Amino acid sequence: MPKSGANISLTSYDDIFSTEETRQTEQIQQIPIAELHPFKNHPFKVLDDEAMQRTVESVAQFGVLAPLIARPREEGGYEIISGHRRQHAAELAGLKTMPVIVRNMSDDEAVIHMVDSNLQREHILPSERAFAYKMKLEAIKNQGARSDLTSCQVGTKFRADAALASGTEESARNVQRFIRLTNLIPELLDLVDQKKISFNPAVELSYLTAAEQRDFLEAMQDTQNAPSLSQAQRIKKLSQEGQCSYDAIFDIMGEEKKAEMDRVTIKNDVLRKYFPMSYTPKQMQDTIIKLLEQWQKKRQRSQER
Image (cartoon, rainbow, N blue to C red; front, side, top):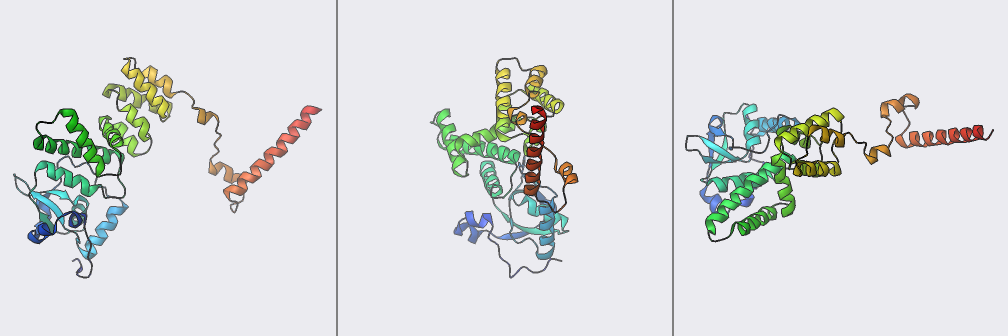
């Protein structure tokens, strides 16, 4: 049984961005968790990670402090607009009901509210940001098309991009670059989330066809190399020229990068075999340099004989 949270008060995103008039007319309802359903095509992942475990423990102790926002569904029950992680935590904590504010919203209003409330999170995966921006951009375009039917398509698109960017810390161009990631096949997008493919090369690879992306994925696995921006741009150019094949991609991905040619890496566990455990990395480096200098002098003397 959750303890009373009477002495604990949190200001939620929804409280901040709703009007005083709205807050006075809306009421918090206790709704069965079984009647709460996730937002259609919700782009944000709800993971059973350490952060979720902490949320579950908090909910079990204090209950759900900030109510969810949901809207009625035509087929019954309620669609969650914001609060998916809280709903999952409450379910794991064994709660049967939870506090919810029910609002009537259009599809576009619901998308914008859902995206904005989730973008407040500290950690957001590139794939989550990409699909969230895409959904919100379409919603803004729909609203703009209804409010200004005489505007040209290009003008509407420009205003929609600017409106979307104004609500984020991103430029309109960078928002569009994130949206490009939604053209990646799921396997490549997962590698972007895992930071095995950097953002800028991923944007270039998003211009490849699905078949070409699968060829790239195979070549990347076979060469055990992540693409640099230059390599991704060259592969994109091959695609534009109709010459993007597995063999061509493999040749590019198999190239030795200049940074790798100029760098020698020795794993820490290899070095540790030769140094006391008390040695810091700086002491290890100084000792290695000193020994190399001695070796170089000895080699020079032997060559002079």
